[in-house]
Image 1 (spheres, each protein chain N blue to C red):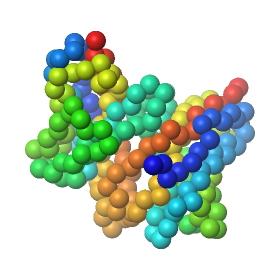
Image 2 (cartoon, rainbow over the protein chains, first blue to last red):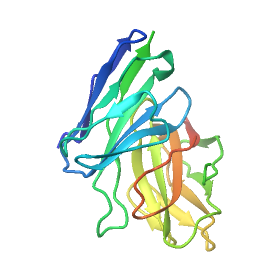
Image 3 (cartoon, chains in turn green, brown):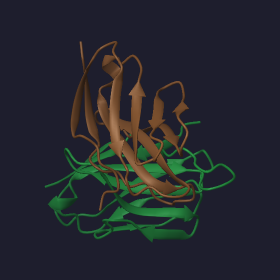
Image 4 (cartoon, one colour):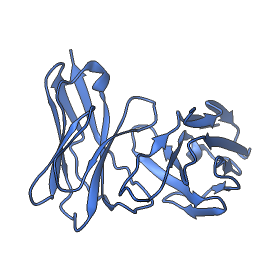
Length: 116
Length: 111
């Protein structure tokens, strides 16, 4: 299994440009997440999804959009990029609640985005 | 508001045990405490979780106090590669949909 993969690894955007950060997982996980991490800070949840066709806002959703058309993919869209969106973006997935009370959340390697 | 409290930083000598504390005084019922770590620039990695009994796996041990209001993550023989930010997360029910990451503890293992 490749686990959670993210593309691109690095990107520089100009203010006002748009882009899509790609995230895919091959573990058949139901739950997927997008976090951002600013320098020296903890991770903040942007959006999450508990299954195909279902998405919900996290702590910092403004300026972002997501979709979940398949179990495997969970792209994050940035519209009208701003310098405040300069950050490292992590995608994560986990199976979701089941018979086991908890299951591990797996993270991708991150996308480092700079908006100038 | 953060539901866990951790010291911002700790040092540990290589080969010694690293003991990372966490306070979670609002824990109740069937809520768990989870530990993740983040090595510089990488995505966080799951370490261990616990409800009320002490837990051990190949990475670490988790000691939970009898009143469950605090816990300690123990890395028995710390190596330089254990230098990372350690996040204590929770308390959360087993069916919780989200993990909320605070600031964590920066553990530096010194040679």
